Length: 512
Image 1 (cartoon, rainbow, N blue to C red):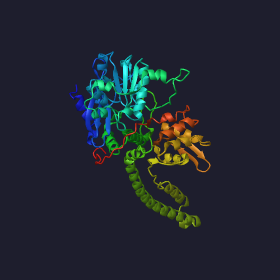
Image 2 (image 1 turned 30 degrees about the vertical axis):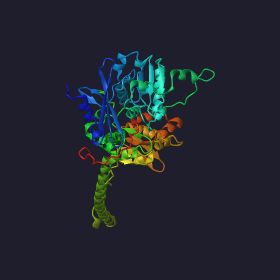
Image 3 (image 1 turned 90 degrees about the vertical axis):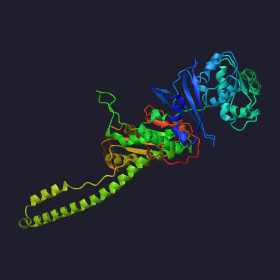
Image 4 (image 1 turned 180 degrees about the vertical axis):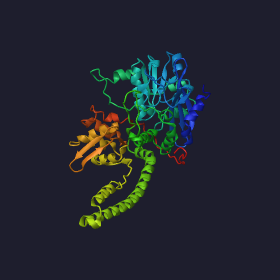
């Protein structure tokens, strides 16, 4: 049984952020109605920039991990035990546990579902039938949160009010904590008297048009927040510290570096080994991966890929150096071979003119045939990746590198979309089979002749902008076809955008 306390575990799991200059602010505890702990949320903040580092933490076996439990019926509200103990009292909903704790200290029964995009995932039944006031943050995300919470509460027959944060003289993105700091003597009565911009009556009646229908509102398809990247669960120990250090120093979401690193490792292994999922069956799975980083421009997709490729770049440099040495040795062996061949051919010419002087002609012919069998083979460069290639040239590379290759594209949608162009249907089929990584493939072209690929194995990775990916999915005829092309991108990540922050420290050389 572990003796580590939750606070000790939080410090350990947040060690990289603490090294990066973040300082602990709070460890928020989520419980059930009986007060039993369900999980925690770690909150760190950089004092000089205001940047926040907030991650969920739960028990995992005998220890702790950075992730939330699975809540199939919705995530519990914060301070749920207090809500259950006061089932008929008015309540307040704000954005984030930090604000909720500050309001509770002033005597207000307050809860939250978490961050701005958390309303849709929460279970709001604990507030059913109550009078509820929503205190949003003073920004666009706060307004979206208030609208989403109001809709969820009206479904629970709540009487809903929304505080008019524009009338509170708050700074941009200001929240309840900012207002309380400016009003240190405010009481629960003062908070209850704050102006509101909407009530349940306004929503149900005054907002209606003459025919009884409410005024239409714009449809907002906000993305759900992505679960925090849990390095303890998702990464093997050999990669964990290196990937997290690179992501923190860049900074970028660790998902970007991790996805690229895993696909690169899959490409290095290629068809050198295979997994047998069944103990008796002959079914084989090659650890060949396709993936990509989905993110907005300047989200550090390409730098993250560059970091993950550094070990591969070293192998490429070594292969080029070894190939140059092999070429020099080959040229020397070829010179000796050609000289001996010329000598044998000269003796054959003499023997052909005068059998008495030249010796045994048949014996010389056999000697030449034997010598040709020992002709030195031209060395083949070990290739690990290609950034731009036709399938014909890729076929030649795979013929000489049957263990597999990585196709790396800075803009991945461009590669995928090219397979849908008229006359290039064969390329789509080529890559579909290349994902399997365990079958031969033969191509026949008038210009290039016949290419026999002993094993077709290709890994793919690149960057994608979400708008371009959405456009492709909406317009491409084969985007969601039943051939399973997009489903082959098993390591396709689209993490939440990470706020840029200045980090200047030495790399973790031991981890690298």
